[in-house]
Amino acid sequence: MNNIPTYIDLFSGAGGMSLGFDKSGFKNIFSVDIESSFCETYRANFPNHHLIQKDISSLTEAEIKSFTSNQEIDIIIGGPPCQGFSMAGNIGRKFIEDSRNQLFKEFARVVEIVRPKYFVMENVARLFTHNKGETKKEIIKIFKDLGYNIDCKIVNTADFGVPQFRNRVLFIGNRISNFIKFPEKTTEKYVSIKQAIDTLPKLNSGEKSNIPNHTAMNHSEQMIHKMSFVSDGGNRNEIPENLRPKSGDVRKYVRYKSSEPSFCVTGDMRKVFHYSQNRALTVRELATIQTFPLDFVFKGTVISQQQQVGNSVPPMLAKEIASAIKIMMENDSEIS
Image (cartoon, rainbow, N blue to C red):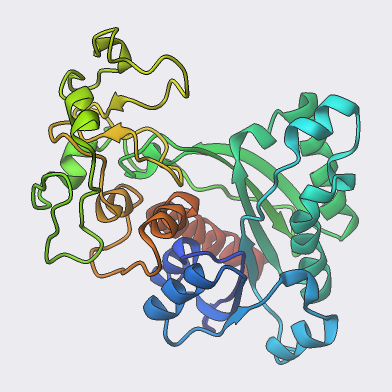
């Protein structure tokens, strides 16, 4: 391949996928997101990218083609938010008919308009088995009808050196041939959360540091007291019964296990405690677990920053996905 491969990033968020594809030598043509603080973060870290801050459903075919300058695009990447899993399965409604999955339809619409050689769609792992596998079949049929060979697979980010157990499903499509290549695991030895974040400055509740986004949440004395009972890798059952929260998410009031990768980072990790410090992790620590570099700065409120981090594809995984796509491109150029 002599030409620099090109990509479009839909639902780009803070830019985890974009960063991975950039690091693998791809060139951004344009990206789309609607959330203002997510876009502020994206612009700060990708000043040379063409970011369109707009509802994707409002983009016309003419606008999309003008953004590409009618050039052939190598790949479209993205992870459309899909909220309609449980409802679609419970009442027998097809996945694509659920209004909450409109953004998936928009991803497919842009693929149909642009006709990239390849696409990668990332989503939560439960999409793979949802509705007894019918949702997965439905998605595959939609893209096959658009002329793509397609396959899907669940990957665990920890297999790629990400210090986090995070299962995601990847749908990869190829318009040129039937060759589909998924990223292959790069490590047999997992990276622990302690290995990833232990070099960051220690902080007390409410304390700030000179490192961007590394500011500790200001916890109440009552919360700190509850935390103090939970051991490395422990949970709420270690808190005395008279202090223990009576209900709520069992994934809260737990402490990270220092010797293992983190469990899945989400948009709200405020009641999950540092393995050795009595506080929640900072945005910088969460971003490090997601494999964002230290110079990648998050904008907006702290809650928004946590959501940006939690919604992201880890750049380290994205880079491996991009490398797999390059192998597909090389294979297809040899047979064409």
